Each structure stands twice: as structure tokens, then as C-alpha cells.
Amino acid sequence: MNIVEWAFGKRMTPAERLRKHQRALEKTQRELDRERVKLENQEKKLVADIKKSAKNGQMGPLRIQAKDLVRTRRYIQKFYQMRTQLQAISLRIQVYLFVWMRLRACG
Image (cartoon, rainbow, N blue to C red; front, top):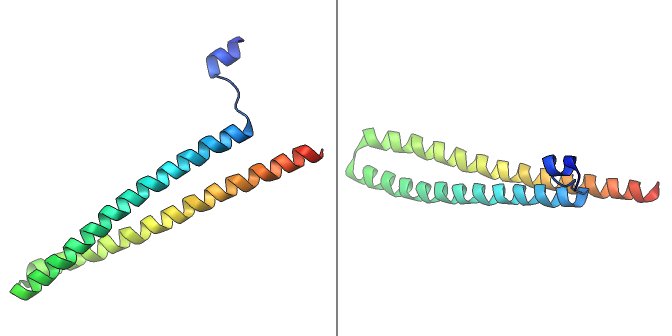
């Protein structure tokens, strides 16, 4: 083991790097899914609270809850978009690696 490997670690192959990055992206996607599920549960509770407030005729809290519901739905939509973008990045990284491996094999 030379001093460079000792200081910076062993040099990773492109396949190892791909696996490392893919795992990080998948972990982030799972975290986003967990947060999205929490928001969806919160949305269900808000809908129930809104119905309860409307039944009791409480217009003040009803407006605040309705705004919160709209905000929650917007956040859920953003979480779906973020997950889709992470999937696109993951696919793009994979394609670049395969192209690089093909070019390396040809020449």
C-alpha cells in the first residue's frame, strides 16, 4: 500500500462508483417516499378536520385548514417531481457508464 492509497483510499472503478452513487440515489428516493407518505396521511387528517369544522360552522379555522390542505397537496406534488428527477439522474448515470465501457472496449 503506497502513501496515496493510505491517504485517499483505494481508487474506485467506474462500476464501483456507479454502485455507490446508485445506492445513494435509491436511499434518497426512499427518504422522499417516507416523507410523501407522511404528508399524504396529514392530508387525510386535514380533510377530516375541514369536514368537522364545516359541520360545526367554524369558518375561521376552516379557511386556515383549507390553505394548509392546498399547501400540503403542493408539497406532495413536489415530492413526486423530486423522485422522478432522481430516477432520471440515476438512469443517466447508468447510460454514461455503459457508453464509457463500450468506448473503452472498442478503442
